[in-house]
Image 1 (cartoon, rainbow, N blue to C red):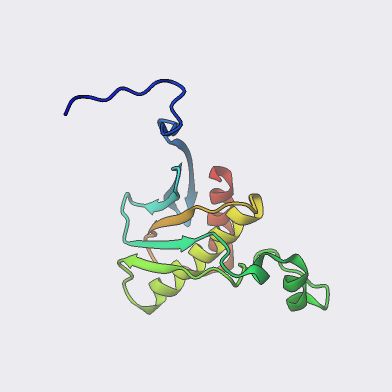
Image 2 (image 1 turned 90 degrees about the horizontal axis):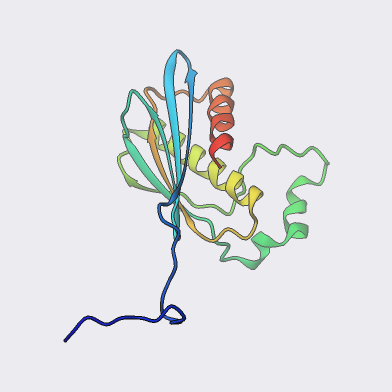
Length: 160
């Protein structure tokens, strides 16, 4: 068997942008330098949130809507009939799954919260997004305070 050459107009040739688009953001949150990296691959969006240069937990969230009612805007209005919409609440259709690490119930809860919220931010920006989110977390401590959560989300929106 020899080397097979493909013509430029070959329909089997797949063109994938190289290198993958990468965005970075850095801020000091609770006196700790926090780094966020987002790398857009053809099949996944990889986002890492690190403090002290460490990662301790990996989660994945499929962004593709399998349930047709979850993409229906009229169906989602039913949960907000009183008109008080809080856009910070994540969409309920996302099911984050921990792949590696966790470090106890509090870290697991924090990871699930961040993964769901980031998935909601991505799909709010692009409703047709069908890739999966891979989230790497390396926060120095479990901190579910509103201010810290919002500061990290603000930093994330800079890279999405």
